[in-house]
Image (cartoon, rainbow, N blue to C red; front, side, top):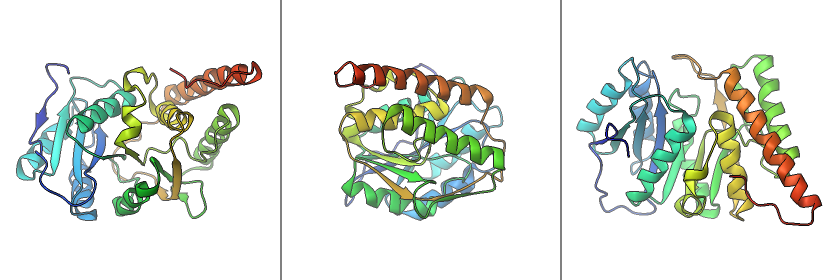
Length: 264
């Protein structure tokens, strides 16, 4: 771990009933909404713990999280010295959560696009699955507040991924999901190579290829009302490149009569 990275007010793990669950929240310039998010996550379930993974936000998000962590041992903060990308933030959080003995690790956005009230359903579904994805594109799911162009982009990205990769997940770009620790222990996290959309697709695909059970449950995604979206053209292009490269490798091995290996 980088010398500038560190934990603040880490919980030492009290006796709890059931699996220990850590909610991972990567942040960059989320000062305007981080306290509301923390309040709502903590209120959603009495045993959840939160890890804020802050990439040295110039707006002071990390400092706010530190102050909350000092007052509440269910909140933890991991500081990273610079903005290194969503995928690397989650990998750092996964590793720390595994080291600290958590059984379930949840991804969610910091902007309340993912409803904290859905956390109990997401975690409950993990009793019968290894990866549970909060899905906008399964029956009962949906999106609020998007432009037509954003709808088309998201649906097209997921359809392209399903077709080229040949796996059944309808919302592989969703960033609201719960992993059982056994999945992360078997994925060789250091080999995850992508960010943004591509990171979520890569992790879902590799989980499925390893034979783990993947389940989707419906959620309603609401466009952020606080702060600025981190979506960019570079993130979209990276996703297309990763899916195309991995999909072509998958098809080549399939036609060659060999079982495809997960992409590295």
